[in-house]
Image (cartoon, rainbow, N blue to C red; front, side, top):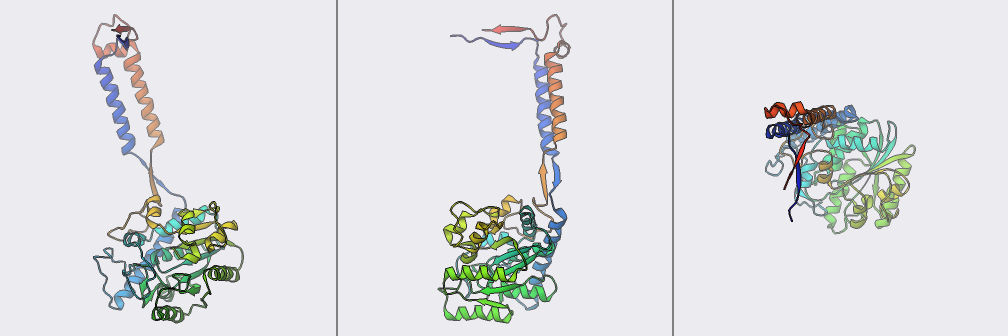
Length: 381
């Protein structure tokens, strides 16, 4: 069976080629001339990132003063905040590239955005749970809270997973004291636990537990949480937050995978990364501090899968050099220039009409005498 196709008789190849080239040029122009849009809360984000960068530089200088070499094969950005694969106070495995990715002061801007989206404002109390596993993220959280004028109530776990703050002489509690002594940050933990399994470093030898207790003591942490079991740890942490906050708690921030703070493996994965404004389905308030706050209507910021968060906010994975404050999609986003796109679309449509639909356009391009109308059609058998 033969099909019958129709084409406009008066359209020349030159007309179609010109319109096609114009359309391709319009697409190229729209892609090339994208608008660089400054993201909301830019000033607060930049202030927080600069404060975090100063903190990272301070820890690096402290290590240099002590004569501790930085292994540039493992820490090419020379941040001095990347730990070791295993030490006496290391509680569990940790992802090397995830820890490398976390060494970016612009995560402070990410935290600012999450807190702003949560509706937190200056003067509010925020509860914070950190471990030693992500010291740079801890620093970014402190910087974000201070830049926004918040009142953080922090409970820290002294121990760390691999590649975190797991040097027995330079745990996270030591780092935050250094930052306070050198006038970079004021935020300090009001309470600390050993961390690890059941929040009592179960599985580590007694000598390792003594090293952790020594860090809590030498850094003058006001309260030592040594729970009887996992449930007791969750209960006692919630009591500390209630007792130490001078008003309602506006948000809870969890950094890392501490079980008492975030929940055991399955529970912690039910929360999405970043801001959670409501509890996930099946969340049990008794399983973790994070679940308890979320079930009570308190927004939760969950910072665990750092590379996933980096991708979402336009931050690089495991950068070779320390990013500068203000770099990344959390500060600037490229988007299409809508006025330009609309103008070019109108131009292409006008050209399409002028060269294809109007008799004079088709005749001009064909170089004919114009004895037939460009809209006439003839069948093709």
